[in-house]
Length: 101
Image (cartoon, rainbow, N blue to C red):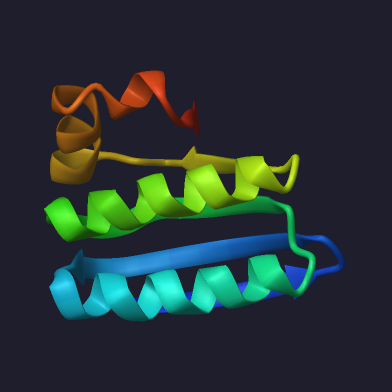
């Protein structure tokens, strides 16, 4: 997995590519928790180029969503499609996350 994080003030855009497995999820979680601790409270995560996400990746999204809400912020998932979108719906996480197409 490749991820790119662009921070602008208290906002960040996160672009995910390819697949998220256990090791990738851990790196992504650490990077996102670090920027949240630096004051970023609005995260927009572009999933348009994400082709696969496993349970650890979904867990990372849940963790980040919870942490950013604790800081009175929000996580928005955008452009999810294919298997990642299906998994988010099957696990009913579409009821938890802010999702934009």
